[in-house]
Length: 218
Ligand SMILES: [Zn+2]
Ligand SMILES: [Zn+2]
Image 1: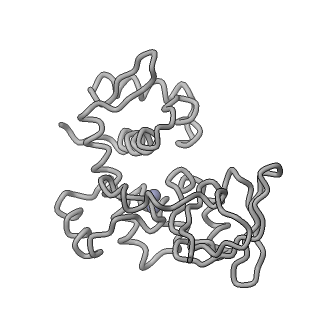
Image 2: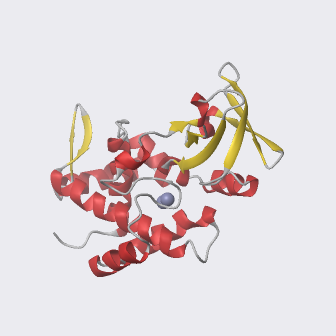
Image 3: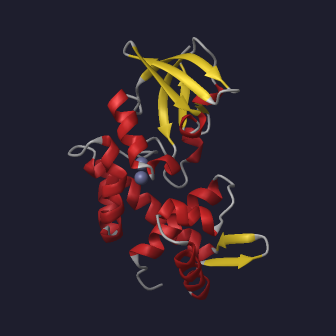
């Protein structure tokens, strides 16, 4: 297959994540996450159907076998690029910067990075490299924890990586992968979770908190 454009690669990686998590792949959602207009999404999706990357019918939009294969490569290169820059950039900036660079990563560089980084199973935000989904399956959203649970933050979901403001906020509070946190309150009626980190109290709405996956410290 010909080299895909960065735009197409971005659509592929997002659709891969949505499909993996069995979330609906709909135009409005793509438009919102990719910061483009719905008509732009429609045009791009038409090109992707023409190029055999996706199918669209009444049941929705799906990656073809070829589309999925390309998507896995893009996601993998994206995550390895994040690791490459983890030594020089703040954690909150990695995703955005990797999005610019990932399209230029060759198979050779991809392999070299994977070796150099020690065969990582996840990206610096804890999201699984394609094929390594089992490595993250035991982690639960912090919204499903209970008061007084001591937890370690393991993963900030890919969809939250698209939200730079949220990442900067989390990083500013120390709520990054590897951080140990005490759960103070989980209030479903109020849609809030209150956490304590380094003696500081942080309250998150469920919309953000559902993207934080943790491991219980026993
Ligand atoms: Zn990312
Ligand atoms: Zn990441």
